[in-house]
Image 1 (cartoon, rainbow, N blue to C red):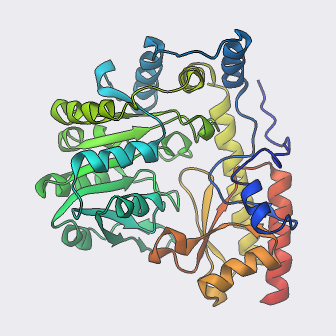
Image 2 (cartoon, one colour):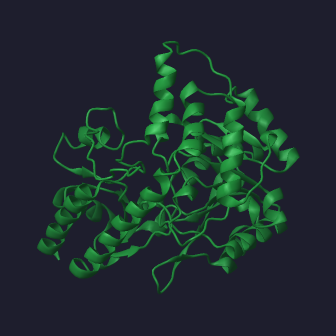
Length: 391
């Protein structure tokens, strides 16, 4: 079935973080929100139908974790990533950030050192800091092709004394898909230094052809036995509000530690919609994902071409995964607060300031193109007019 990704859905006044939160801050001034990492497309109909079927029963009771949930995940990881997992290796988590927070609390102590790569998704450093851990930042490099690269020489220095390393695979921001060789190198360095790897792979299913995502635990024995891999259908199937995610832990000792920890917090189960939505996403949405990826790639190509032709002082780190474009605005010569103000006040756009991803993001802005093409065209035209008037 052909999916109509051009359909514009009015999300205003739905308590949407993406739409209604900035509306309150900006006193309902006209703007286009292109920041929070959810999409403006309708969630796939099989997922909506699975939820509606539950609602039609008329009873919102306690719901057990069904075996179909495990089977759906095992089938998905095998078919998509050639990764064989067993039921007992899969642990439900009520959202990946919460799951990472539990792992930080379980496998480290206050004042322990945690390593992250910068720029990176803000909870990677905000959550450890809130849990009184010390964060060290390994700065990513930008090569001549405007792609993120790992400085492994510096990584080996930065990993010294760390307890945990939180990896974003694929990386956010920038959409970098790490190669198998890069992941093997990370696994080896961390194993050598007795550092446990937490791999957030929420954007994995949005890897854009011809790039290939490698689930971290599949790249080597060292990776398999020294990692916790977090996954979720929430990004790819546009259902982040359902907090339906899981982690896979191959190492039995660590798995039992983590399982005991989350059981003590009583967070091993969730609401009924978290289960049925994942099952529907993984089992019934085979026509959705390829069409979505093609549409997102078209949006990325549109932005890339327009920047080259009309706004050459704004470069982009072209995503290899997901719908989030990291715009390099350093040639505009604006301080971070002035850059954010330019996008908001002169272009009428709400983006994520790059500096919010750490100091390595200074001079950048993150643009969400997971939206209908007509919305994207309007947004880019507003940006072009503001750019041409100012620069």
